[in-house]
Image (cartoon, rainbow, N blue to C red; front, side):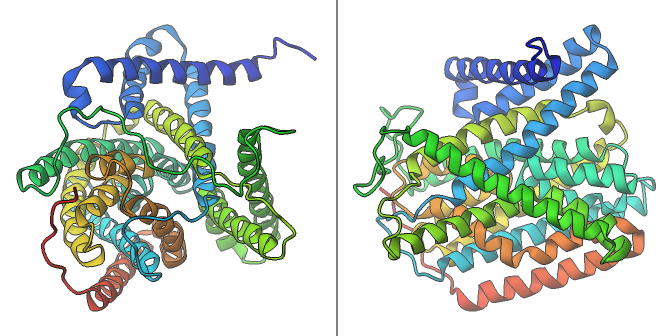
Length: 472
């Protein structure tokens, strides 16, 4: 065995650099007032520091090949982290909240998330098509489909599909374009989130405790009575990590099986050129589905008394998801290649401004109908998630509901799970849109139709709620 194997050491070095960025950014956020008040997640600050260091410093001292190698490692970390994080969230057992929801609430949460994806897709495609027919004739027309991926699903998915568009469909700079949209989504969450919180504070809907610290301790139960011991023959945290990795291994096997079947040309070129990239691009969705299936299996085994103790621990699974999401965010932002965006800045700025404003307005209005008992908390959580990631949503949510007394945090996870079912047609459209301009126009029409249908369902089954009182 060669202990100087540079492939392994390069991976460790990149993780160490990302960890250093996170620690440095954490110090800056604690010591610099405007950063602390901005609610910008530490991982986002670290990502922008890493991006600046890579573009300004590293480019002067390292070769292009070394920079590309760094981007490859960062992209790999982003790709796998998003799946591991969602698997950890999917394995969580059900929690109890002070405010009770109907069982159908998960359906409405999923429909809200899907309708926001569709709204972002409609506006992104509308801007891309309009600009490609006017002042930016060389703009990749289907680039608008990267907006709901970057805003609605975060940097991991934006990178995955942006890379597919770049490699398979000729969208030059597609990967960086998707990552830039996702990065700007974090800025939207921070700036618009702070403004919205100040509005709620002036209206008396939330009241900040002047002695309240910047970080909060959840009232989440750390250990249930029927769980496995904290440390016995094997540490409980080791069990949690093992469960997550086992589910990801099953997910990988499933994707390899689909890849093998498609390579047998059972669906022809469509299977090879469209299905295979989507399968590998949406690894986190399949990971979430297998995590939920595993959780159902555990419940069945317990009902049959085959499994007598509860193995998943929500507290530790939250820590795992938080860990991998932090590294995902800093790696994804650092992986952006600024030079890839040289000819895309105009469309990029127009898209993110229009979509960001529309997302905040839409979620604010819809939360009043779907979450009448805690609409401010729901608005903050959903807006943070649908412009960043689930962790960004939690950051904003904590400003309104620091002790997680409402089901708003659970809505993010359960809603994302049900959104997979309702949003499956969108996944197909993501693969169809870039095939040709005609396919982009057809996709545009279908996305508009789907948005109208989903919005009609939400408006029909949810009446407008009365004004919300003080959460405290």
